[in-house]
Image (tube, rainbow, N blue to C red; front, side, top):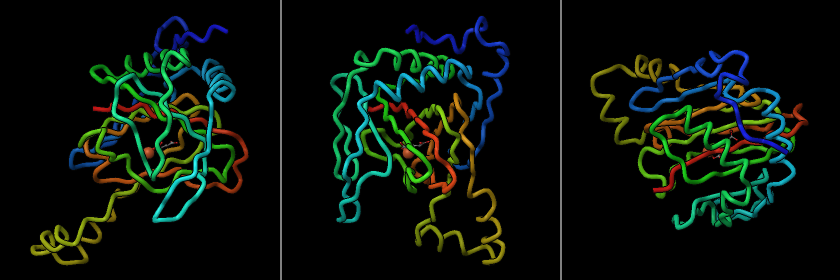
Length: 240
Ligand SMILES: O=C(O)CCC(=O)C(=O)O
Ligand SMILES: [Fe+2]
């Protein structure tokens, strides 16, 4: 099967402007989202989906969250370049597979790098949501190994799901500091404005989180009762 990506070349993309249709959402205070709904061509994206669904060694690990064991509500797999510090989250340390084990991942990575000049990703967390019960709860990807301003490039395949972003609550100290010069009503109005964003992540789309998004915001893919189909998501990251 030839899965070599031609996504960003004009020859296979009927409308090369599609890849240029990127939306930049300024989350203020140095956080930014880029969203490209039609990043990869539709048909090729189904080939990627089938390949990933079949070939990736998916596992559903048991995590420890607030001292409790729970099965992660989605399948996962981790790929990373050799010699990087190991990833660990919620008491789970995934095995790091090599890019050479799944060569098509290198082609997707190449397309991502082409769309984001200057970025260089060396690890990848894959998630598979087998229906609407599978989800990822509110979190930020703020592990130390990604540094203070991680860039995370997220490519989605298959079933469309909602991706939510919500501003973290400011801690008490900074709340009190900013309360000196403004009445409460005005402050609350201000803080309600655009403190949440929602994206329906399309088959073949690319969403990028940048700057202080992991420090100041949380994100999630919530349960959806009516969803039955499978979604696969790839998040490319740079381990320092
Ligand atoms: O599936 C998604 O779109 C998000 C996945 C995610 O947030 C993560 O892997 O950290
Ligand atoms: Fe995340």
